[in-house]
Image: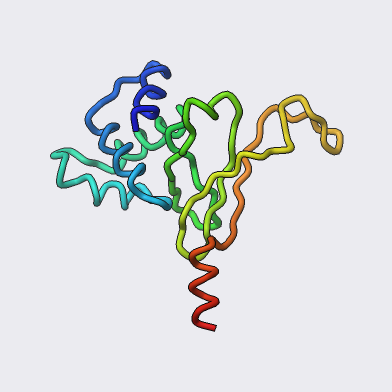
Length: 145
């Protein structure tokens, strides 16, 4: 969590009690959470815990790399904890999400980089999210087959 707190400070943001609570919530959770789930889990700790403020803080934490936005086919946004540390912060990483249990893993290998050309397009940035089935869910499903 300290890496996340430092990333917030280096981004020029205040480390507010609400942001600390959000980092703690996400760092202790293996999968994505929606803004409403975050609100429900934090409302007992904060007298004022409106959804607009939750959205703003989630977006701020995603912009500074503490969280990442989970891409889904539904309309509701969700976010997950970015397990990027100081050691791997120089590069970038991608995420793999279990379609069965929602667990989030990290993928460090990437064949794409800024300036590379693909099909006549020069890459300036990219986001890659992989969906799969985690080892635990694969084993559990295999045990029930």
